[in-house]
Length: 125
Image (cartoon, rainbow, N blue to C red):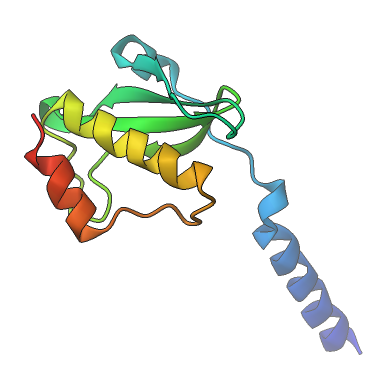
């Protein structure tokens, strides 16, 4: 009987720990705030979606998508690419963030970037 109780308790704790509604969104770190450039997304009907261009490693760029002022997607590196390298140009990060907001507006979940879209973005300087 005790082993059944222990097993049930374990599974209840496991389910509780994995419950996504208990997780909190990660706020933007204070140390990053000096390196963030904010832009309003020109999309309507998505609530308050904006993006911020953030500084990445070795002089590269990434972005945060904010929903109602809170970080919704944190993308410090090129999405879908191997490694953790960011975009080489700020305009590339901006194009990727705008594409993500467009996909969110169109209810594409998860809002992934295809290889073809990434190729087009990386052509931008």
